Image 1 (cartoon, rainbow, N blue to C red):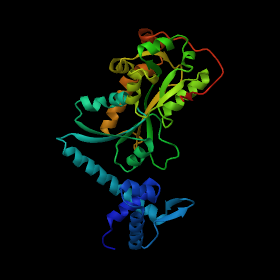
Image 2 (image 1 turned 45 degrees about the horizontal axis):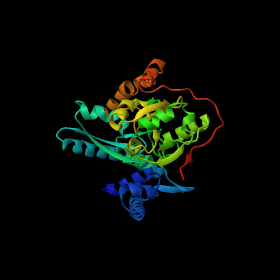
Image 3 (image 1 turned 30 degrees about the vertical axis):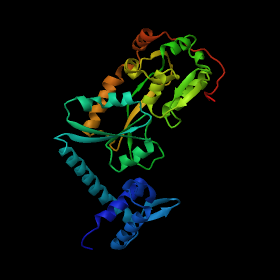
Length: 334
């Protein structure tokens, strides 16, 4: 064996990283039959099996683990070279590819990435929005440098990834001035049968809101479920219903959409994560946005100081503390 077929080795490496032939084929944009066939040719060349089945999973054999160890040295370097060359073609800018989970509000995404777009770091930013599982697969394949999400990396994923908490923010309710006027009094009981726009149940923030509704015994009338946070705000701007959003972007929401705030969740808070393949952040772009998010975007909200929170509330609306009543779940509008 004089020359190893690196294409075959790439397919094997991708199968191990993606956790199976089918997800590897999807990541490589080829058919599963092609992946299996190419790995069989590599096994013939190496004169030994590289994968074996344990239950429903394919795992490397001893020979496979050895081959994978070397592949882990070879292919990340090649992907890094491709990234550097892409950056060289953007007039000296360094390319950074970022995945944004579709549950992350657009205004939060902009505020997190703003230091890369407006600073002097000379970064060429590429953003890709998709559901979190799809982004995790691209992160594992090194097509992304970072994923922004409202939850940590799933614990059941075979992908080796690390979740870095960027910060957390109190959640407030917003609506047009006329609707907010009817809901501000006796909040949160005023949310009973009130028209509400929510993220779909794929969002971690949806589960946060439903738990809060149940804890405080309120049953809003859900008039719309939307993945796109900007679309939620646009619907609300036209009086369709109220919505909840992180108070870290309160000023931008009020300015852009002409709505007002009328109440706030006591607990819990919206959380935002940067997910990367680095346990300790080394990528300069990731380090910049992580530091800026923690020290600027979420710093005042994270401080836990009642003075800062109450000042924001009294400027926009007075908040009545919730009373207790029997729990109930939010119901969909018929």
